[in-house]
Image 1: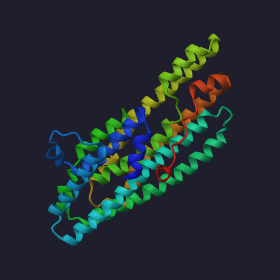
Image 2 (image 1 turned 180 degrees about the horizontal axis):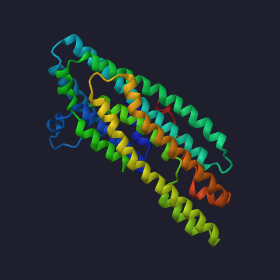
Image 3 (image 1 turned 30 degrees about the horizontal axis):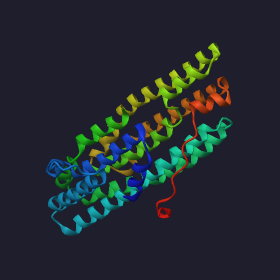
Length: 167
Length: 136
């Protein structure tokens, strides 16, 4: 989570707020209903909150997936997703920084933008492909009832989070 | 669920590219009103900024609608990679459209503003902080 923490420290303003919301959302959704159980009145940092939610999600996977081997596999894939998310935030910060630098250049050409955006699109495609692959693998590992038990965790939070990001 | 959100974040990653092409609207409007003294140019510049703002607002609305179809696909346990890519396609297309529109407007704005005025609308970003490993 170093990248996320570093990013959150570095960024300010509206976009940082949206990313913070997304970061919180990722782990809030992972923990789902466990969020309420974590609220003991003591304020946690976003990182601590994320860690707590992630631990809660792992516990929930072990409760739902009775086969320890499959539960291990699901958790391993979730760990992989976590690393992906970290990478996404780092890349997003870099990408926006590169675009802002180009924006500030009065003499920048359309070709300059095309080249940068092409490179950024390629990077995003790699991340998306990895994420999709992990998502499909997790679907295959779980039974329908396990999926339903885990799926309901965070669905509403996803919608809320998307709205927060879109605002 | 975690996976659903990851895809969402990845999609928003793209949105981040697109919206970064617009200036910070309030700051840009203030800078133009304060520093562009030539009335026709000022009016033209503010119109372009207004169009950028409208484009971003429209994009946010359509993105919300398109995100629902991504969520529906993600809700299916046995969704295939192809189905996920198909569901995400409208979102990505909308982002491409916004990017193209904002770039068009940005280049129109370059023709209206001087280099000095441009620097007030699109200021240089602060230098990136040193990598964590180099901190003492």
